[in-house]
Length: 116
Image 1 (cartoon, rainbow, N blue to C red):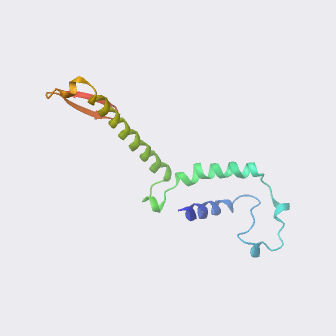
Image 2: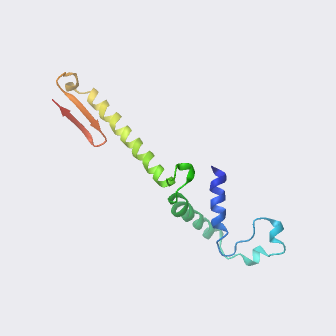
Image 3: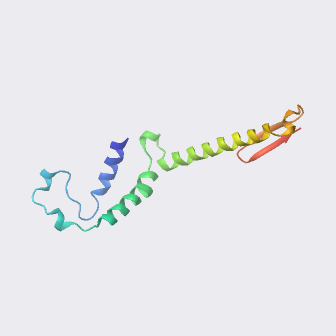
């Protein structure tokens, strides 16, 4: 996975102004220091934007065509829903009316409902 991230980002890096070459053999006598046109802060900012606005928003084959952002959102939604349902059941278990056989509690992420 890390190799894929690096490959994608390196493809983007080579589109930056002042980029050099993939290896020292290709670079030859090219003066990288003289041709540099971005500061370290600018490169760090570019990297954060590239990950957040490009990498995480483009479909990945390894994610069955979904974006990492979408997968993350689904995971958070699932965790929050499961946590809400578990919390709901915990609260219901501590209340007096859960022992009443004529009531059924329906729990969901949006709350609980008593069905009599």
